[in-house]
Image 1 (spheres, rainbow over the protein chains, first blue to last red):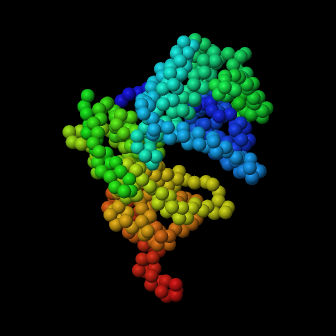
Image 2 (tube, chains in turn brown, orange):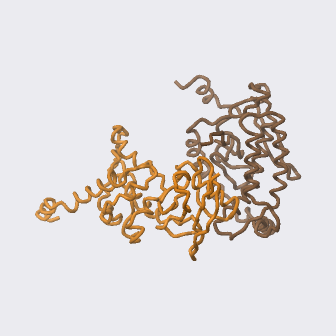
Image 3 (cartoon, one colour):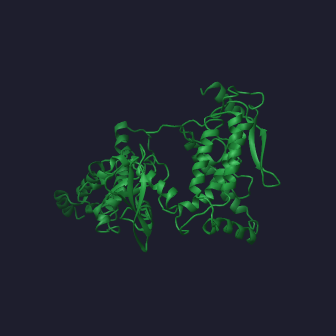
Length: 235
Length: 243
């Protein structure tokens, strides 16, 4: 049996409002592992269940409130956008010499394992980011056989786009954060750097040209009642 | 490296048949790995439902060489590789595509089971041995291999009359809960059809969680129903009482 480290949990994720779990996209709510910030730099075993229960409920309440308050025409989607989305979805069926999505999926796994894995360095992360650009290019033309019914290969074509975005976000944030904290281990920066990285979160957004933009935002301060428990122990 | 001949059922509600694939066998490989190899190298649209690959989600049920098993838990080296390995969808439920079936009937039946009903003023205190009795049934991962192998559902298609082994352990879990106050004996006798089970124990044999479905759940439930409805002494007493 092969024994090796694998993806266990992703601490980062979609930025949400803690009370409603609303995102910056109106009408989109996120809870659970897909939402970021809940567990700090490392999630402890069992904590994601309570995360799901609490924020799953808040997401439901937030979405219900949003739906109740929405005006009739507030969620109009342009027909042109719908057409473009449908065309993008169906492209792999029509592709002449596109690549097999499974081949790229495997290459992506290997790239992330090799360059953005457990122990990270500046050089490896940079190499990984270069490799991701190549994979992004290759994933722009995919080919798949069969029908639209329960077609895992077709689903993978759709998933790959998101996987590549998330992979790039992880690699960029890991390269930027020159310290080790929680599940993020930089061999070239093995200690905490509280002065710089103890005070900010890494934030990924889209710039005006549709490119991935990397930045930071101030770390929200822990409310006093929580700080007492975390720093003083529960009595 | 050894090569396995995999004969995988491919088709949908309109019919289908076996397709043969050569798959290189690696150390520690399970049948689900072989299915994924086929997807990646031969047919990307081969449909299979799977999630955890750790025998905990209960999604990847199939019939391997005719035996209902989890494909993620069945090692290739446990199978005779000098003969082709057949992989079929579970037979008791309608096929959607290839290895994927529609198991939604189970969820509909599940909803008809009267839920946990504690007393209004329950003190939430239980003895560990009472907890453990129900706990065995809570190991169920809802792979529905027991439902698939049960001849009442599989051969006689009595889905309208018998809820099946998975539902029996759900009912047993509630009935044996130390703080539950509901009485499900009438439901067991009529809607759930516990009398249909004739204790062949096939469900116990295929359970990947090794739950003693027949011995610890179905037989005690049968005894409760018999006590309430078929005890001759009780029957005579009821006659005199005019019940």
